[in-house]
Picture (cartoon, rainbow, N blue to C red):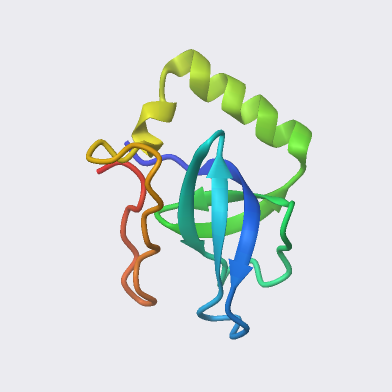
Length: 103
């Protein structure tokens, strides 16, 4: 099952709005995601990420609420890279959406 998961932007790379990426912290798990759909997103803000793309912004309280629900459902394991836990995975190439988290 694919989920859209909240995460906090810790850094941003690139100036071109279509290729800009961000390192996003999903409760201690870092992933590189595309920020093309949220050009206004800034470091320190929370975004909802689906298949390697940040698709919207949200506030910290809502992000924490979603994390708690995911913990209760034991769904956070989908974010982990089973080969090397904690490893930052690259975002999919533009035009080639793919599932960054899980499998």
